Figure 1 (cartoon, rainbow, N blue to C red):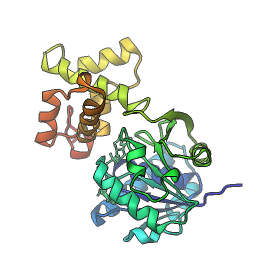
Figure 2 (cartoon, rainbow, N blue to C red):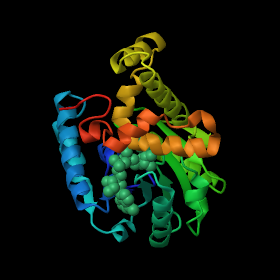
Figure 3 (spheres, rainbow, N blue to C red):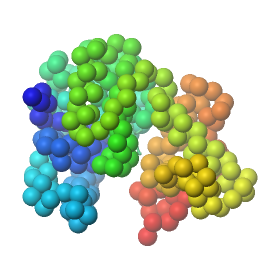
Figure 4 (cartoon, rainbow, N blue to C red):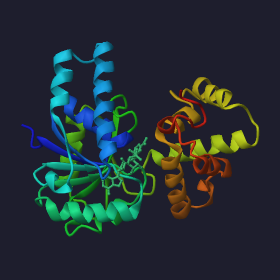
Length: 283
Ligand code: NAD
């Protein structure tokens, strides 16, 4: 029997939208909160168009798609997540913002509710330190696009209890994902590698090693990666990528120093698909 029925999601950006869709399609009731009303409106449109595309591709029946949409409710106040059985945070990758949110989530939710963060790289222990019950805080790291990527990385902080790990693994599986259990280190098992590869690709672009298309093609066909580093970074968002790199540079050292060209792209607003242009254009 499922112990979780209602999932609260905080942050309705790229990842919040994907997690909300995946949870609703797997039969969970979802409450989605964001500080931005326009992000919530956009999220509902994006989820509806994802449902439509999945129906067209015959990956979802019309009835299941409609049912999933009715399970997602947007809410205008964090307090409305107080009755959720499990809460997943997917807000901006900023430790101060996450700590402040976890302080509030800890105050509004019953103590048996797991508070999970979708952080790409930050310390679960540090986020958890803002909560009066840090033992119920855990990393639940989904990948983009959530409906297609099979993995959820379950990341344990210093004080996370076994019960919280088991609940998170169970939910990850019930949401249709494979899970791995990872001990907390900056960047976990995935972002540490993808940040390095994306950064190196930018250094190669800066040095004139090849065009973005040729570097992506080389990595896909020569190394058997499903996506090239520029395609993937455009999908993730170079602002998010840069934040991860800066954190890994601080915590793990010189090899993660962000490439100056990548920094310039972020400064210019070429963040990837979400802004219509990153390394490639999306018209
Ligand atoms: P995003 O910028 O697309 O969305 C973040 C959303 O959070 C925005 O809508 C913003 O309004 C909202 N927000 C900011 N502060 C808030 C607060 N205090 N309360 C409620 N809402 C708030 O970011 P994203 O790409 O969806 O990333 C979210 C998290 O997931 C980050 O921690 C990121 O590192 C992680 N992550 C991202 C990816 C990816 O591919 N983009 C993959 C895995 C994990």
